[in-house]
Length: 179
Image (cartoon, rainbow, N blue to C red):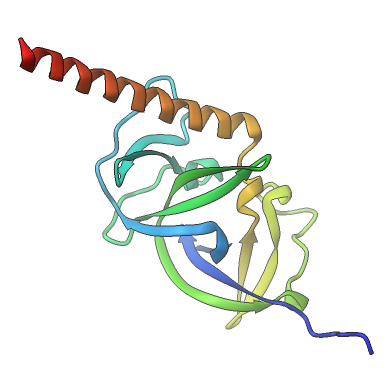
C-alpha cells in the first residue's frame, strides 16, 4: 500500500510592506531586535552593513530593497532574521531586515500552489510556492535561492574584510598599550 500522507512543514511568516512571506523554520536561526549597523563601503545597495552577533560579523541585507520594494522604514516591529543559507554545500549566515515577524504556521506540502508564472513582481526562482492561510496568500520563499552565488560571496567577503579590519585595530590598540 502506497503512503499518500503529505509532509507538513513549519514556516516563519513575516511582513514586507503589506505582503506576507514565509521562510522554512529550518533556515531561520534567530530573530533579533534592531541593533547598531556598521556600514560597509562599496557594498551593493541592498546590503545595509554588518552587525555583531555574539562576536561574529553578520552581513545584513535590506530585504525590501532586494525585492524592489524600497528601503525599510525602521519601526518598533522591524527586526532581523538570521538565516542559514546553503551556498554550494557551504553554510552562510546572513541577517535579513523585515518589517515585522508574524507567527510560525504549519503548511501541508500538498496545499502549496506553484508561484504565478506571470504577473508576479518577484523572481519566481526564489518563490517556493504560494499557500492560502486564513484567507490570505503567503509567498513561501526558498531562502537558498534568494541570493546568487556571486552575491553570497560578496556578502561573505565583505564580512571577512570588516572582521579583518576590526582584528587589525584591536591588535594595534594592544601594541599601543604596551608602549
